Length: 322
Length: 250
Image 1: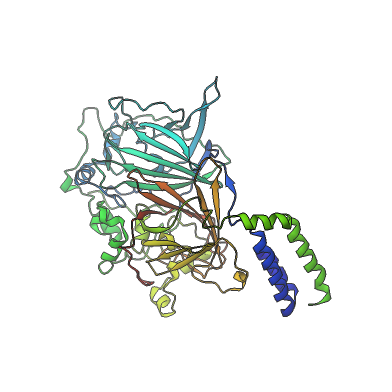
Image 2: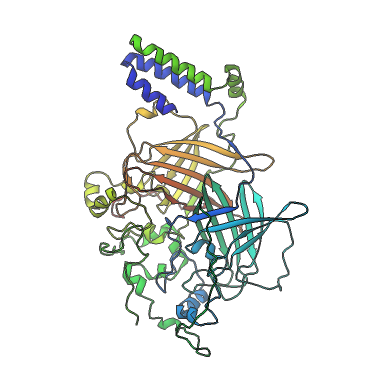
């Protein structure tokens, strides 16, 4: 409002009068800004509801088979990822396997969140983030229940507990299944992985922060923050997964590559002139020093000619299948 | 001052008093209220380093000319995007166009956050050697100043109700020079508003993460809000601080 008042005075008065009026207004506003502090926020926010994806952040990284940008992988993780063939998902027994907990922030969908209360005490028991066709969903237990034994069943979704902390919902996931992935490009996650979540709301924007650690496959945590916007229209992605024949007969072998012979290794590198160590998920590529290191060797790709805008696919084109 | 303006001024002054609280209350609060520095519900000061796990291809290297994926650029922006000429920017002295407030938090680098005074938080960046001043009290002359790369930032704390602790820093920035959202010339105009929330999250290893939720609105070159959330890891000291000047080409 200060700006509007000042503009009104500037338009209405002569130079001398303007100075006097602006001085008076400045004094009054200085007096009015009494505490230099803003509003007091409740310690919890309304989490349940439908939250639509924004699509303004590039976190998916699944448009080319070998894309490990933004990851700090161990050598074993890199080897396993390079041996992965996305055709595995065409095997009938794997079609409905879905993706693990991390897919909440690397997948393309929105969040449909509900709360469950104890029918007798009315106390909050859990929040549920509904599943998608290829994601198992996530239940965040809020009732203080103990974490299961380390020998308990490990699942794609894992076991998640939560609590309100500093105005945010903090959650912790364990018991994720071995053989899961942190990227759809086959980057693995072990059953020793843990994920810390933080759900932060500002206005109608919900930011989900994921910090995934894995002593087996990650040298440093994978950190993703993804925004969602409150949707007035309920979202529902709960289409059932219906397996069907996709060219692989039961009993066929599991599609894979020898890690050193992955035919897609150079596709992303050549497409954008990207450094190989960045595409392959080396730790140093996550820090500003690396930008300086490649300053004199990096050659920008040729100008974009197709699908250049917001609705375009992540990559310009797919190379021919070798 | 013309006679016809006096009723206007009188009305404005009356309005200011009506929307405020009684003078005695203000005086009492001003005397007893902590400064923004003392009232901080979270400590943002220190050195922070970009941890580039998202938008890598748009931040760590210069994307292809003409590419603006993930940014809701308006039709008015497209000719500018396609005409991007970093050499021309450099010749015109506009090499800091991709280091303005609409982009600087996404530029890989380090932040040094300090208190300039009791009501001004200062952010220095080593990438592009930029300085942002986040003012908790508006400058009386701010509306008269010429646009700058970092614009005018008004800040306020949003504290969580006791007994819980914590909160967030809300910052709204306007009065910026026109700049680029990305290195390859995706534009934002002087009419842009950048709304940010600075939050701190603990890391499992005992470290801290700074999350900057950013909403960029531009009635000229954006069809809708451009929302990103870059994050930074806390560093123990400034031993890796490495100032580099703005560059159009890198």
